[in-house]
Length: 304
Image (cartoon, rainbow, N blue to C red; front, side, top):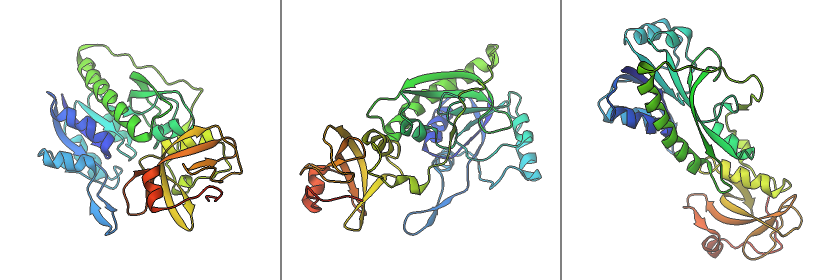
């Protein structure tokens, strides 16, 4: 089929890479414009834009799809379908209706749970035991379209946003390719989303990364895993901000934030956490024992 691909982050690029290797014709790729990144704040193209340009595919990066000329340019592509994966822009009705088979969105949750921007992180942080990927026929509204296909995956007790994203990207890529193959030859019947159980995965705010040791240990553990690798949950010690990338539940108790031993077991509002992997500013991630060699934190101290 002749298609357009619309996506931005690495999760999207995983799907685009498979489509490039498939029998489908990619007429054009849409991605969000390059953003400032790094200490120099230089403009950096998205993972999708970089992959498409390296593959010789035309890339368009409009700030919005609402302008008449943008909608007109899209309609002239004469598409069978548009594949949308974490694009990040609202698609107007003219865009949704232009392809023969409409726009298919791959979303990293089991809709209607976790509609919105950060479904992977929110699922982990909420303590969900199951998630998945869904292909929906896009409609007006935020992730409100009817479901064509879905694949379910468990969320393990050690899953991070990074590791879960990799699994969902692999499953989602296979699901989208299979859906496209069935779209023409089979009469796929989309089912409406349930009207109950709707939740919204709001964008992760930087303020959510700060660890509050008064919270239960199990909630902090979910916070750490849900924000790994980015933005990374953090605490402060002697005025220095330190990222916590991995921890595990521990049976000890104490005052919230109190360091209970020499292996970085820290008391929480309920229970405790043993800190396993940490990262100082400008340094690489390291196991706790290596971290302590260069940054002493002793039993009896308090983390903030």
